[in-house]
Length: 398
Image (tube, rainbow, N blue to C red; front, top):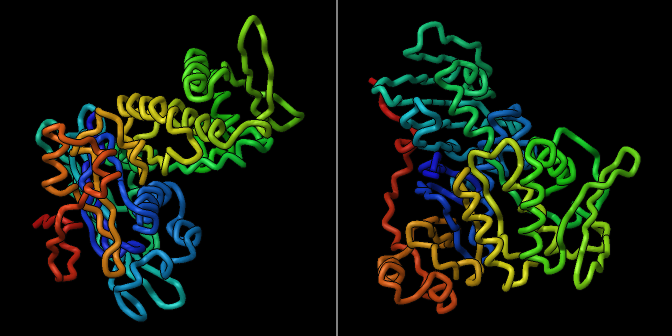
């Protein structure tokens, strides 16, 4: 599947002063611990949550705007925080476009939306747009005049309009996952099961919904799990009054079988199951971010995990953070899939790989995993404009 989100533009977000990150499918963010991979990942979560929750709640979840804006921007009220995406085709009619917003910090942890813009180019050559400045919004769509709160975004309000709806749906359906095995060991409260939570704490309901909509997928999940965890043939949902839990069946030899509750299973088994639930959930996310899939997974089983992620790329956009050479040993990983996350002079930078690393991969001299082991998977040199500008976020519509 071609990437629906082509680039992510960040201005003064967490440890990232300014960055434009070009995305492929899949994209691997490779960097050492503390380089800022999680901050980049949180930008996707922030965007998705901002489409469905009040902006105040999105900031409060992260400790307020003062914890989100880049700390190197100034002492009191730093220059404005900005975020944007460029996208390709989102449905049969949308050819491409961009969406961006800029937010200003106010005293007492307050904030206001300074500017917000959405542009959509159709396959037929038409362009639809809105451009908001403060409380005022102009658009080339007649009758589009919502009442705007200074501390709220416009897109969640106008996203009911048919031409902007694909953008809202694509951003709102992005998902970020860091599966916590302890959450899968617990008995869980049932819910609709239509969206796996970031930590996997409703995996039982998600697996139930997968079984209801497509029983063959639940069987497939068991088959893939068996390739990761030997002898584990299937998983099923078990009811305990109003709670749900996971039950695993292991088989070997001549009809020898044991069943185990989730509290008896290893972290690696539960994390693998959480990843499977994320890939096969209904509805399918537009973009899925997986943080460090190698965690607690035996290196011998990483091949099956990577095959799963490659399968996921056929129906969604996938982004993976890692610092594991074993993950990058997959022979299908190309230079276009790699972005290097580095920490320099108090700031996070995300760049393509260096020309020397690119040539080594293209000429099959070394794989990405070998380059990382030998400390030769290097980023492109940084040549940055010092000027502090928001110009990359918005287009001039005049």
